[in-house]
Figure (spheres, rainbow, N blue to C red):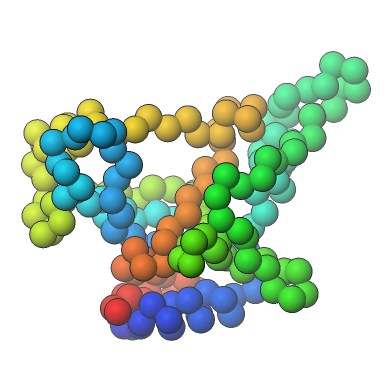
Amino acid sequence: MSTVITRSQLSAGLAAIRGSRIVTITACTVPDMRAGNPFGGRVRKTARVNGQINWRYTNAVQKRRNTENTPIDPATGDVVVFVAQPRKWGTLRTRADGTLTPFVDHKGAEYVELMVKDSLGYVYHLDNGQPLGAKGRRMVREWLRSKVEGARQMVARPVILRDYKVENIIAITHGKRAYVVNG
């Protein structure tokens, strides 16, 4: 059974979580498509993703490097230490005591930073909710911008980071409790 909550309740609930947590987020977003696509901004992607909040990117990549034992520094024989570059956009929000929150602030908007563990499925649909058929899905995929995941990480299985705008989150599950976001 799901509990209906508002976006402000979602934000407050996530802000109260201390320490790393596994969550499942369902979000409705506008896919990043190349200019000139025939959809004219009318396509949406509703995705359900399982991942971790309140985590540190550098630590996650270093852990993955250590697990995969790569890349090795030829001089020392040790795994090379990963140094993350600054975020391209947004500012991670921390508490006064320096602990993490799951939020990234950018141009007055609030985002949830998620380390993706698993994609649980997605559907493309028009902005009126009508799902796209097989032909429509193929067309969307042809117009999507290509992504390079974790090229600097130098690992076989890169750590995947996603930022979900709070206003795009339509459901979340954590701690065995499911919430539907309304308003």
